[in-house]
Amino acid sequence: MNNLSGEQAAMANRSGTRMFYHLLKAMRPRQWIKNTFVFAALAFSENRLWRFWDNPEPMLRALGAFICFCLAASAIYLVNDLADIEKDRAHPRKRMRPLASGALSPRSAIIATILLIVLAVPLALWVDSDNAGLDFGFLAVLLTYVVVQGFLYTYWLKNIVILDILIIAAGFVLRAVGGGAVIDVTITPWLLVCMGLLAIFLGIGKRRHELTLLEGGAGDHRRILAEYSVPMLDQMLAIVTASIIMAYSMTTYSAPVAPQEPYPMLMATIPFVIYAIFRYLYLIYQRGGGGAPEDLVLKDLPLASSIILWGITVLGVLAIF
Image 1 (cartoon, rainbow, N blue to C red):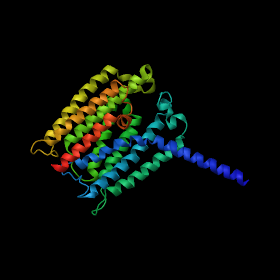
Image 2: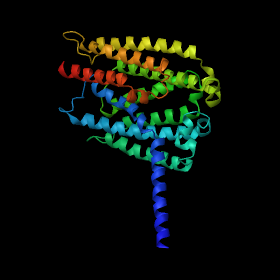
Image 3: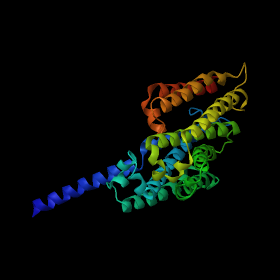
Image 4: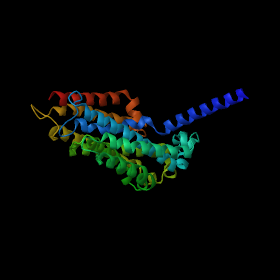
């Protein structure tokens, strides 16, 4: 009897471990890299509070904001997978997701979604509080992100052509705005323009990848894909690519955060941006990538290297000049 109870306990532990593994997988921790946008305000704000050794509080607040967005984003991914569970089963890759494959039960996903949001809200209030009391600015941004991305997009806006891509881009902009709100700084309009264009670029690349991967069955998997065509998305990519390079170049030249003496030093970072954009296009057109931007950043060494060198150069210029 004792042996049987021990075996049952061991099976229960293994079952719990497997459920936790599949739940963590469904939360998509690899995509948390997108939430690093919250740190942009530390460097690209008009009063530049990023220097950790002078004042660690803004960095710690931004780190707290990053964790809040990770919790919220994971809740949104679960909501999205719950809503698309049947459609994902018809997708050659998404059918392996925990919910679509049956490895994770919808009930567990719903409970986890509620817990993640319940954890994110008080944490958002805590990281945004100060001696003057509670500040609801960051929480408002975070809840807007959850409502727009998790519910309006999942159940309505993703079915509206072009607007679906713009809403994806809005999620990245909200991350940057949240990062500014939590450290109470003014984000330069140029930063928002660049991030918005970059997010649109990534969204178009994602749609193109889905369209080419699913070919004739794209509309069956996701109705909105029937509204797009590869030539149309290629035209949009060309326009946005040029816009990103121009907007970033203008940012380095005239944004308030950029040191202007002896000359606009941030212009030295433009080659890294151009290379990263062109490398990403190469991966889309020649390697069939674009479906998961975070995978390309993590797996493609030239792309990752250009982003890291860009970041080091930006921080170096802002620290020295």
